[in-house]
Amino acid sequence: MRKMLFVVLYTAFACGANVGGANAGSLEGLLVGDMKKLAVVEPVALPEAVLLDGAGLETSLAQYRGKWMVLNFWATWCAPCRKEMPALQRLADAMPEIAVVPVATGRNDVGQIVKFYGEAGVTSLPVLRDPKSGLAHQMGVLGLPVTVIVNPEGQEVARLIGDAEWDSGAAQAVLRAMMAE
Figure 1 (cartoon, rainbow, N blue to C red):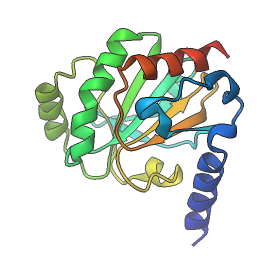
Figure 2: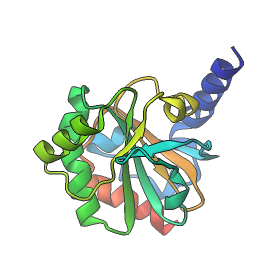
Figure 3: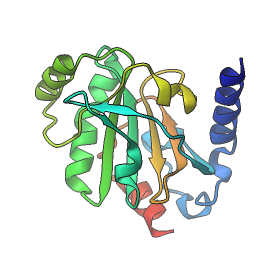
């Protein structure tokens, strides 16, 4: 019950601010197309969580601290995730200064992830898994896909529920504006 209360409070805090967050003014006019779904929030520190890499070794998101991060929660069985993943790869190619970090949430076999990456043309994104959905639950991810924008201090500053064309000019303009703050 206590864990569920934390999830509900985290989600309410993270999404409740919507476009009233610190960066909202600088994004005025940029939230078009898929970016209309982006909720800008007051910065919230990411919870600590252990993830598994493609070799089954424990890792964490701390390795991305110091960079802007596009953190995407997805699964191999999720149809919108399958549509979105190639755009995330193209975003990583177009904006190498940003860490594009997909995290397969729930039961996702490494072999299936690798196969999916091959089919989707994903060549440089890491294989990271949250097999028991611990991080996803702590962050109030209730459906997939969900993408969280994380600042270099390791704080969530925006969240988009559902798929998006992350390689679009609109998405890149939003990300550049956030990075300029």
